[in-house]
Image (cartoon, rainbow, N blue to C red; front, side, top):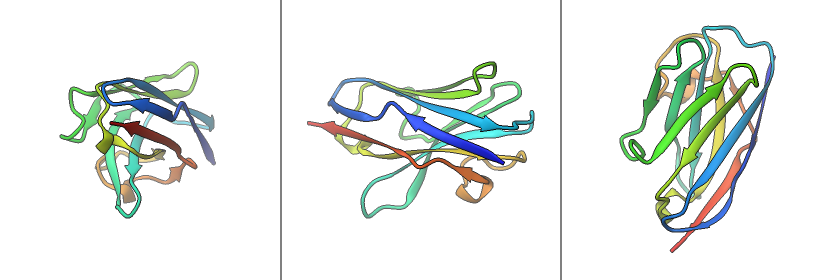
Length: 124
């Protein structure tokens, strides 16, 4: 069993930056993929970014490529999402997720474990 705990959300003005963290507890194996998704009120939960635990290959949604950076620290068992040049449309609850098997990182059903989410609000 894996537990995920997000932190780092908050309020920021447009153009600002925030860094989210996802602390992972439990056993992780090298096949894991870690992802970030976000869900704005009334919207679906959308893929943001993902990273392979082993090797660190990264994947991004087109809407955030070049703006957000995902990384992981395997020793600390933590995944990060560095967000810059934030826009009001980035306002959402951000969720960390973990997938046990290699799959399509952009798809929600790839993931087996989810955190509770952390809210990000970007004001104009």
